[in-house]
Image (cartoon, rainbow, N blue to C red):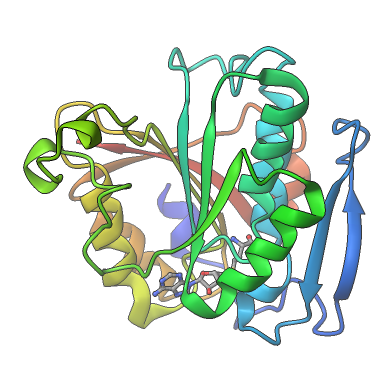
Length: 255
Ligand SMILES: C[S@@+](CC[C@H](N)C(=O)[O-])C[C@H]1O[C@@H](n2cnc3c(N)ncnc32)[C@H](O)[C@@H]1O
């Protein structure tokens, strides 16, 4: 793990050219029969306005490890079923939208995916939900890291509302984050949100895709090691390809 964070960092590398703008169809090598439609605004609404390589990695992994029956049911180290998913710092919404399309066209398992980000990205995420016709499967919500969690996402009874109907609601069981470790001042905020989301007896699974850019990134991983085991996932087809792009996939396991 230390060799990932310890050496070989460059200055910030822009994963996509700024002119990446407009609509594109992504089928991930034909794995998605109905390609994902993504509108990118070229960064107009912030860095989340375009697709980043870590988001692509997470989609590839999800598509490879899911068959037509259920989400991630081919991921050997997992035995859980995922029914309520929250993606942090979703940007265009790429990963959550990919799950929404699978749910609509294949799974039919009552999976709810929430793509979240700062308020100014929410309109772009909503546009992308509409472009793919997955309004029933995916919701776009504001979720600022470091802020108290809305009750839809809060994990434990004591941090939840006492209303009877709310107790019946599904708990978040999968958290996704792609290219969210890039801004040092946001590290403690992201850490707080990860801790808040994983409070309690049965914490959700976390998958984090990460592109190595700055030396300072290692401070984030060193800090979260106090509460999370960081396990690198290597058993997927395009591991070597992404390794060359300094892009990694981790499972964070709450201790
Ligand atoms: C590099 S982009 C990655 C976008 C997307 N996950 C992908 O892989 O294409 C980082 C995202 O984190 C979001 N972000 C940054 N700081 C945030 C904060 N404090 N709270 C919530 N989201 C934040 C940005 O708005 C942006 O969409």
